[in-house]
Image (cartoon, rainbow, N blue to C red; front, side):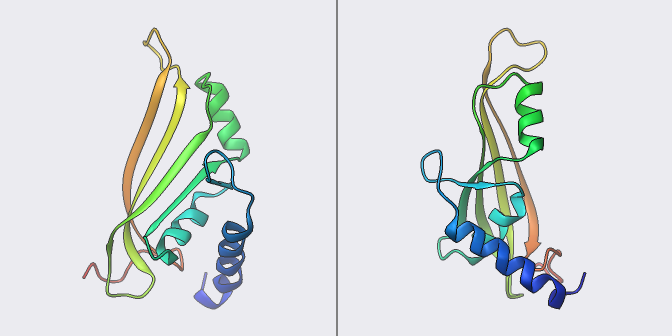
Length: 127
């Protein structure tokens, strides 16, 4: 999809982050993690925090018999020369997760990095 078609979607996503009612210690409720990725790209601190509130989040929580919401932290690792592009670190965490083979529930986290631009594409250069 071309950038000119994405512009209204990006503006809507950014506005939804700015106007959303904050939950769970100031986190923004989101149904799509890309909203937080764009918010982190636009943030002066390079960070954004949210809580996943989609049907997928409900399914994951039910599957793992978890007791807490899925928390998402996005932080900027490195900004690239290409405007609106950066290396982002995404951290997902959930309390009370019961993994197969474990006797007690615990906090489970998953971290990963991604090169991402506001238009949803990877950067053209990593410099």
